[in-house]
Image (cartoon, rainbow, N blue to C red; front, top):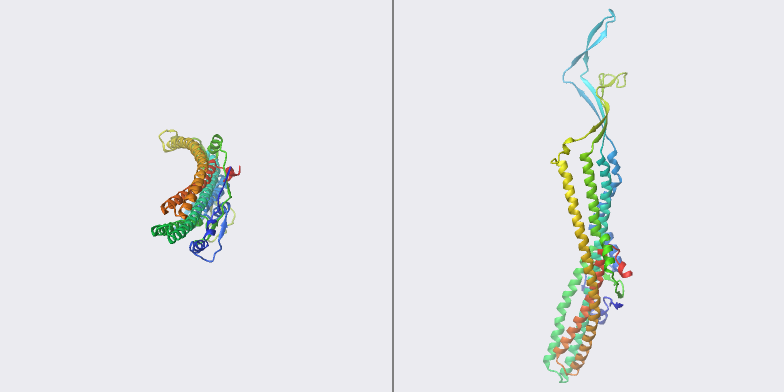
Amino acid sequence: MTTTLRGAGRGLTRLPLLALLFSVFAFPVYGQEVQRMTPDEAVELAIRNNLGLESTRITTETKKRTSKYAWNSLVPTVDIGGTLGRLNSPSTGMTIGIDPVTGTVVPYSYEVPQWVLSGSVSVGLNINFGLFEAMRMLRLDYESGLISYEKAKSQLERDVRKSYYQILLLQENLDLMHENLATAQRRVEMADANYNAGLAPELTLLQARVAMENLKPAMDELENGIKTSIAAFAMNLGLPYGTEIDLIPAGEELDYVLLNTEELISKASSNKPDILELKQNLTLLQSRRKATFFQVYTPTLSLAWTADPAFQGDPLSDSWFMDDGWKQSSGMFRVTLAYRLSSLLPFTSEALGVKELDDTIRSLNISLAQAVRGTEVEIYSYVLQLEKSRGNIEALKLTENLAKQSYDLTEQAFEAGLNDYFEVQNAGLEQQKARLEVLKEKYNYIMGLIDLEYAMGVPFGTLSRS
């Protein structure tokens, strides 16, 4: 079953003067062309220009780069240094040598150079099982960033689409008010004709004119509301202030969707952006707990190599490349396996940290279960709302037809001088109310579908296209 949606702006063609005034004063004119766009084009523009989404994208790119180079934890630390120093006072040293004359072993003293030159090189790497889990955690963090980005993008698209249709509803309402103003003008003309023909008192003519004038402040207020809404909408799209926007309805017909509640709940429980984010956060937290456990309760293997060469001569007078010019005293390669026994005590900060992570994981599991149950209720509520809107639209259409027939008969009687003005005015108000309620219910149905598609985590338009 289909219901026709009247495009925004058709009613303006019935009042060229008012339409011209509205087009002139609706927005400041900066020499910009009017941008006509469909809902899909508005979403594309918002995704490309929205600053909040751009900030989320940058954060995701940072996590991607960190995840790509997660293996750099296995790169050993390398430190190199050199020292050139001067002793505050000269010193001597003792050594043992053979006397060339007597051939006996005798001690010799020598003067140690005041300037000394030494170097240092150290290479180290600490390996623990927690290191590999931390590398996996970086990858999970990047995947969490992707989910958060997709969630932010879906929220932006949902908000843009709903704002789009809310503005269309306001424009439809403005069209009705334009038509009501034209009708009120026609009533003034009829009241004037009846007054001149002696069929109606002057009071009726005055009442008609007052009713017409009372419509104008409400129209001005609605026009200001539309301008404010479009300005906020343009800001969300990243467009400059004062940009004129002409919103084009996505389609001329409203298609009702057959809804299977159980199937919708099943999809939403596994695909809703909020639930996907919670699941990913839970996986990330479990990985963090595993990495912490390995770091606390498994030994650490340390690989290290050091060298500390020192120049044996005078660095200012002797050649740095002379034979036996460099020697080292403590350089070595070592392999160390260490385990922190204090972490076995249940009251240490390390052990308590693991228990706190366990508690957080349990709390997050509860939050996930609550989110799933809440999603079930949310989907059920959306289905009821859509079914209610569908039934209301059919009932309101009948009410609108009856209100129109009542108004036509009342207006004919008024034109013939058989009814007073208040009867015509009340019938007109009832007709306007009935038409507005039909429009509101149609747009409620469209925005209900948008909310349902977001809750299910499917591309927008999936339900209406299917």
